[in-house]
Length: 115
Image (cartoon, rainbow, N blue to C red; front, side, top):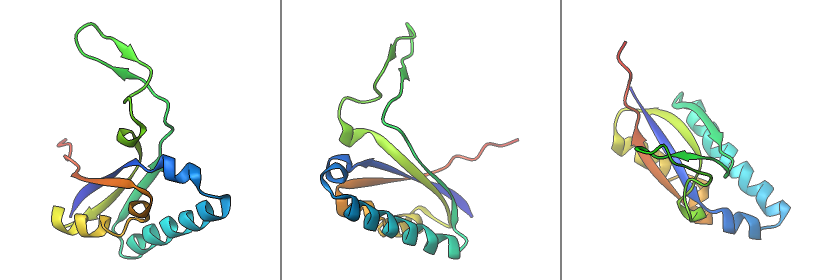
């Protein structure tokens, strides 16, 4: 099995426009989606990320206090799963509830570290 990471970008504007009840229901959908992957023993881990951060640029070691200028491009969190292929992982990602709220999902294979 290989590991894949789902990187979530955008959706914050939609989230902010929703009521606390709608946000709660949406979070339940996320928990259900992740729970289904966990039951299949394909879920590895997940974290949500704060929007604040720094980016260190090469060369002069310039640091900027915001990773990207537009929130829709900012990685807001990730899920790591196991899968046999990129195609299978992509099918899993298609169930992401964030897609309903203008969140895009980038699916990337994790490059294993060889000891």
